[in-house]
Image (cartoon, rainbow, N blue to C red; front, side, top):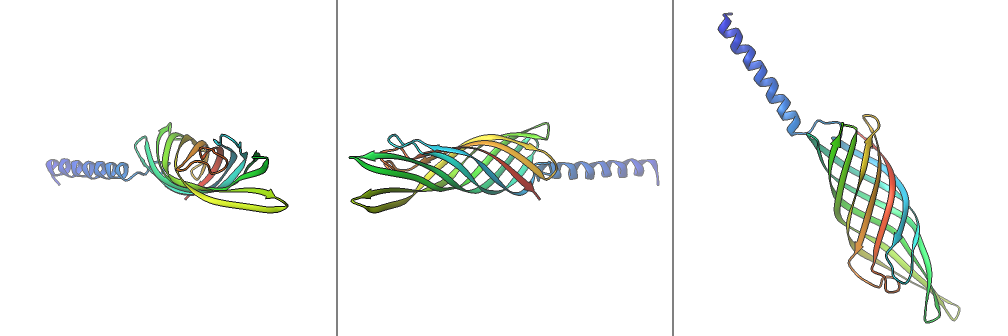
Length: 199
C-alpha cells in the first residue's frame, strides 16, 4: 500500500471513530442514562388553612434518564402512600382529615456535576386522594375525593455506583380546587429521600 493510501485509510478510520463518538454522545451513553426503579420515604404537610395535616409519606418510583453531555433529561412516575392527617372542628363538629395517597408523572431536567452528582428540577401532572370524617349524633360520616394537581419540585441525586442512585428532593402538589378539607387551598408538600436501581 502506498503512503498516500495509508494516509487516506488512517484518516477514514479517524472519521469513523469520531462519528461513532459523536453518535454516542448524541444518543446519551453517560453514566446517568438508563431505566430505573426505586423507593422513597419522607415527611409531608398540607396548605389547608383550617386544618393542618402532617405525617409520613412513602412510595415507589420508576423512570428513564437520557444524558446528553452534562445535561440529563428524563421522565418519572411515582405513587406515594401517606399518613398525613389532622383534626379540626366546624360549628362544634369534630373533623378528621387525611391525605391517603399521591401520584405524579413528571419530566425532569438535570445537570451532572463530576459525573456522580446531579441537580435537577421537575414538573408535571398528578393528584392526591383525601378523606374527611366526622361524627354526628353517634353516626360516623365519611367523605372522600380525588384532586388533580400540578406538581413541581427539585432535588439532588448521587450516583453511588453504576447502578445505585440516592436522592433528596422536594415536591409540591398544587391542587386545582379549594375547600377539600375545611377551606384549605388543597396543596401538599413533600420532603423525601429515595434510592433507585438503574438497569
